[in-house]
Length: 65
View 1 (tube, rainbow, N blue to C red):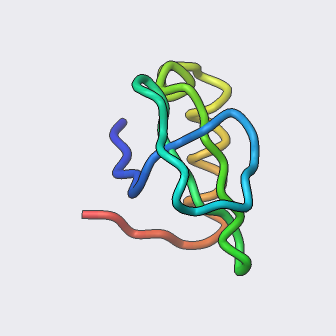
View 2 (cartoon, rainbow, N blue to C red; view 1 turned 90 degrees about the vertical axis):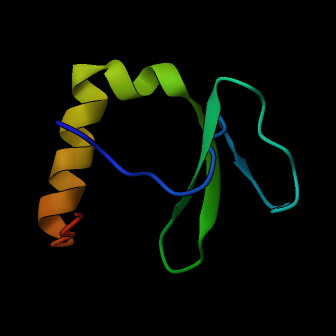
View 3 (spheres, rainbow, N blue to C red; view 1 turned 30 degrees about the horizontal axis):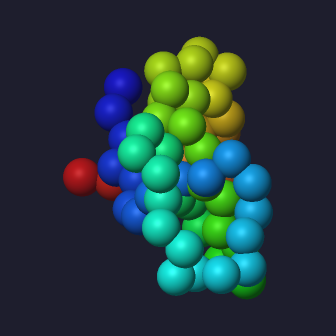
């Protein structure tokens, strides 16, 4: 299973889009308001997080190359 995730992540939401992302983290923008979250890259290896991404892919009919 592979994912293409644009941007970077942080462990909590932030209102400033110009904030740097620490090494080992990835920024994710969510929803119509593009709320920004920065999460640890290690989450990408967690089965529960992978399942969450799969559910979002199915729900929103995302078709990545």
